Each structure stands twice: as structure tokens, then as C-alpha cells.
Amino acid sequence: MLNDKVGVGRISLAEQKKDNFDHYKSMDFDQAKTLRVLQGKSSKRLEAVGFIDKKNFIGLSRGRRNLKVWDVDTGKVVGQYKLGQKYRLEGILVSKDGSTVICSQASFYVQQKDNTVPLVVFNTKTHEHKVMDSIKDEQLSLDGSAITEDGKYFILQLKNDQVSALWNTKTGKLMHTLGEGSSGLNMVAISSRSMLAVTSLESLKVWEIQSGNLLHDLASTDINKIYLNRDGTIAITIDSKSSQPSSFEAWDLIKGKKLATYTVDTDPFAICPLGDRIAFAPVASVTVMTLRLHIPGREETKPGPSSYGDHKEMSEFKGMMDPCDPNDVDDDKDDDDSNIQ
Image 1 (cartoon, rainbow, N blue to C red):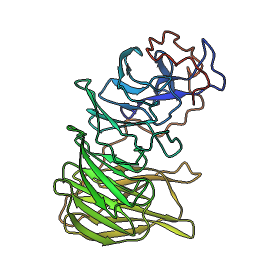
Image 2: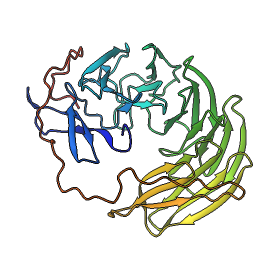
Image 3: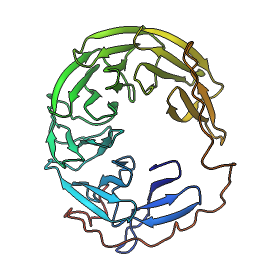
């Protein structure tokens, strides 16, 4: 989403044709209409996209050799960047401020021939890129990873060991490996505001970014997700097991203690952290629930009114069948291979 009303969606087609192919559309969700068709083709990596500022959208070329940037206001491709990597790109992770993009050549589903495959970092302001320090016998992917809001630090759970690794993205250098880091996916978090990183393996561990020292080892149940508040000082974790109700737990990362536990009646789905609030929808439900973390002595900040006004129910999204823009201006030589997965 570019803002609370406008976003970009990928339109997927079963059969790729010269004038009808996978592409992106800019959509107004308040008016339920397509604003414009973005130029050219999209890749098949659904999550390899993101906004780098208030008007520019980044993704992969159709053949996944290059990064492409679109101007959402015009729909035109305004930049295409070669990173010099050996394999096709499998995913990207964009920092919240849009300054930094981490690119992977491997994923949970895709393995390459080389045992050691590095990540590449791309600076959206200077358009420079560098290969980040590799780790022997690791095909580095973005599964179980997080980047600071300013893009300066990146943490990744390694596949071959219960260890998380921490990089400085400005230099591309590996800073630390954090022993007994994480197990599973989406179980790391990091903040440059608090200069803390959080991992989980049988407990919640809090690390100091600069030194790599373990600050707190907090007893916890199995953790599926970790979210940080804006200051990076409080973590909200989710424990979701099929055998018992799901629960949210809040942790003070500075003092190293649990703040609260809240159990819900059903598995939370489509979770979104909003400062000291968590919004989520139960599975198979259109109801959105919000939890607020109460901190004694801290004044509550109330959310403003919805920019959508009263609830609306749209029956039809207009413009979804608008034709593709065939002028791909794509410098990816293999982008016409319809078998690219």
C-alpha cells in the first residue's frame, strides 16, 4: 500500500500472451477502481515488491535478472538495475524508509548449484549495489529475516544451524553470528532505534546490535511471529498452536521482562502491528479486532478517524480487465520465456 487508500496489486493470468500477461495495476481501494496499468510485465514472485518512497514502486523484471522501478503516478518504468548476480533473484526485502533493498538468489523452495550463495544489497538513493559477506555452505535467502527501519542493519536466521547472522548493510560486512538464534521462519526482529535484535529458540533472546552481546534470555512458549513497537523497546510475540488457543505476549526488551499476555478464541490471521496496537482478523472472518498494550504512566494515543468514513461494501472493483501495457522496456533478455517460474 502506498497509503491507506492507494496500493499496487499484481494481476496474474493463467496463459501468457503477447498482449496479455502478468502485470501490476495501481488501485484506489476507497473508490474501488483501477487508476492505471503499470508498464510491462511482472515477475511471478508475489512478495518481491515494495515502495521505496511516496511514488516509486520496486520489483523484479519478468526474468528476475534485474530490479525495476515504476512511477506509480504515471505507471511508467523509471529505472532498471543489474546487480551482476549469478542466479535469478528469488526475493527482495525493502526497509521501511525505502532506502535499502536486500536481494536473494535462493529461497525456502529454490536451491542453487553452488553451496555458498550470497545476498546483494541495493541502495535506492545512489543506485549502487554490493555483494554482502557470504557464509560458507549457506545459500542465503530471506526466509526468517528482518531489516531495520533505516536499512542499516539486517538479521537472518541461517538454514544449516540454529544461528542468526547480523550484517551492516552499508558496508556489506558480517558483524556477528548470534548463537542459538532462531528456529523456524519469521522469528527474528531488529530495530536501529533501540539498537536491539530479537531472536527465538525455546526462549526470547534480546541482543545488542553493536556488540552482539546477549542482553536477556526470556522464558517463553513457542513463538510464531515477533513484532516490535516503533521505538524497538517492546516486542509483541504470537504463540499459535493447533492444540490450544492463540495468545499474544508483550515484552519489555530494555528491562527484560514480560508485560502482559492476552489469549484469543481463534487463530489470528492477517496481523498488522500499529505502534502499541495489534490489529488482526480471525480466520474466515471479515471482523477486524484491535488489541492495545496499556503501559502505566504512558499517555494513550488514540487513533484518528478512518479516512474511509463509514464502512463501505464494494460489490465490484472497476477497471480490473483494463489491457496490459506491452511496452515493457525490459533489458532482461530472458523475460519472454513463459515457462519462467
